[in-house]
Image 1: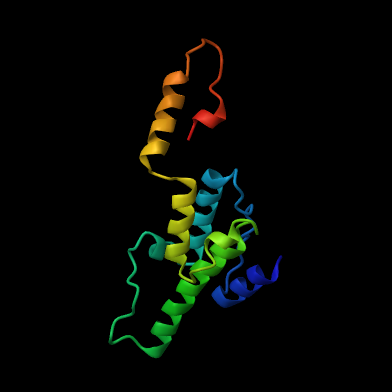
Image 2: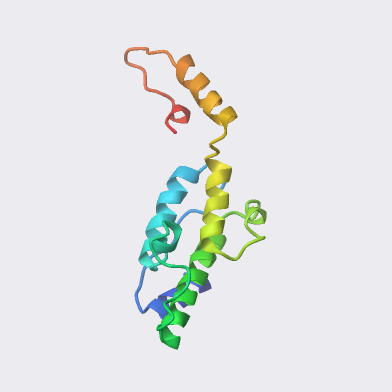
Length: 140
């Protein structure tokens, strides 16, 4: 097990196999689901879906504030350590896990007019042929 995994297991006090494939240009769909499970395990997914506040309550204890900051840092660390080196430059300008997730999502799932038109063109070029499977590239 790598040092990041052993450190995180020691901090959380639980064993968890967090060996997921690193993100490459070709595996976004599977990686994002694997990463979601990993972030959920470490209590960080709440930050991505924005159900956890960015800042602790004013009445929060030092320990609660520290715990929140550690989980926010862990969110970014898990994302950063599980992407290929050629993609790391996309998120080096931030240390925020939520921002890193959004940058990666925008990179792999662009919602521009050009992308929508490209997907529509692919869809309408698809022809039904009985007994033939659709290519996986059409299943986005």
